[in-house]
Length: 344
Image (cartoon, rainbow, N blue to C red; front, top):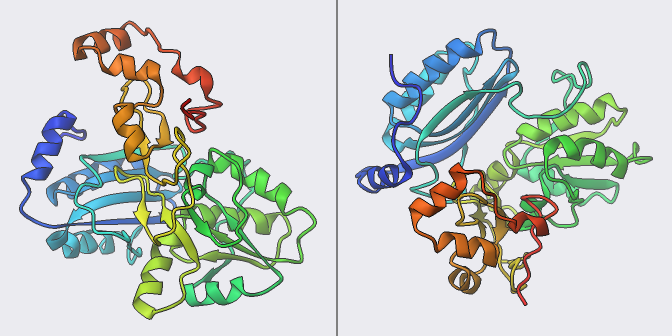
């Protein structure tokens, strides 16, 4: 049986990726479907995907699958065949990346989770057989022009910060489980409105639309395929693009450019910037927006404290982590996703 985990360090993985002579395609797919034995399916999928040299993240749960992967382009037909031969994933649609990245993922991970999207909901609070109406890009654009429409971003604040649909409600939340009650409160007394929900690839909106229908909203709609497929349709069909800025993605790129507008600011100097990064201090890894000048000035770090730690020999850094000697950098954050890093 194949090793069901990565056995190489990041440096080795990057070297292996750089030596590849073939092209890769980054895509995502999901499906809510009853999986009776996720553990067995994990073994099968890992072995099949590893044999095709696929990289990325796949989450399995009793409620379905959620995958973001990088596939050797010439192996796309083989992946399609594997999925179509499964009773669970036959015909599952692929959402292809807006850009053509070569290094979106370094390794393959297939994990079992309680849910493929953590929602914090009680049993019976969503019926995934009763979701909102799925809209194509053209239908979405037309619906946005309706004065009775409310557009809602079902993503987290750090995602909508760098890009969103014009005039959308962008909840100030860190997680999807936080967004559902927050959006419900924002939409209170608006049951007669046309609700338009969107997210990155559609998986969160599937649950969100079912949640709002459960709570009495009748005209609930969701963007089919999310932002990723919306951009594809806009480009292929020559439609008006109503999305502004960058689409945040959950791989090493941390974003795909959709339009040239930069609507965010560097969290350290305040200059226009929409480039997310993780703090270079391995004991921190805060997600924040950092411009090129601040990246050079701070050595890719979020605070002076982290900068000092990164300047230490790697053995010393490892010793600090091993000894659980935590730095105090996060004292200035509301959370790891809400930096207050403006430099003096």
